[in-house]
Length: 164
DNA sequence: GAGTTTGAAACT
DNA sequence: CAGTTTCAAACTC
Image (tube, rainbow, N blue to C red; front, top):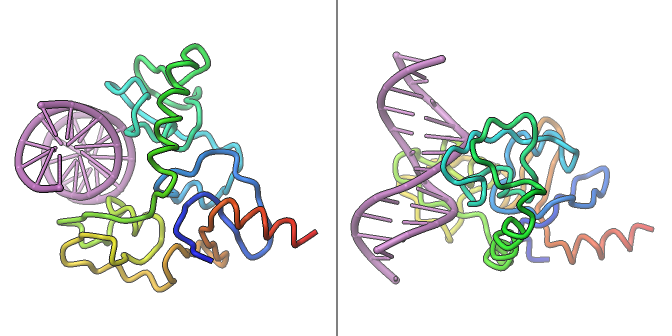
């Protein structure tokens, strides 16, 4: 198994089908409520929620009532435009891996994508003075007493069918 | 809550 | 490809 993709979360107790395109970082909020209808809350002002700056779009979710974004296009009224952006994103991220280029945060703050995702920095990273002390292996993380491993969707489906 | 810092994403 | 700018979140006060 090459757990390089961020497509799927597998945890010890259950398999859960992803409801969204996993993009780059799994936020703490997401980990706590994996694949539930957790409404992200973005505050985008200039991106129209049509760029990856938008947290909602970055996870393939629509913006919702809890967002406080301005001139939002990440809704069903702008489906065509939105989906085009998402398609490009999926293509771009089909082999996305968690890596960072941190300069000042020592990979110890949530600015760091690796730290934020709960994974160790890897040789893919170009960070300076890395102090990311996550103990788990690459693409593994733990919240509370729940351990998670990021695996590709394909593998996820295989595991799921084996479980039946 | 306002202002600052940060680094990914976007752009050139 | 590398350097720069833009952006919104993380962080600080």
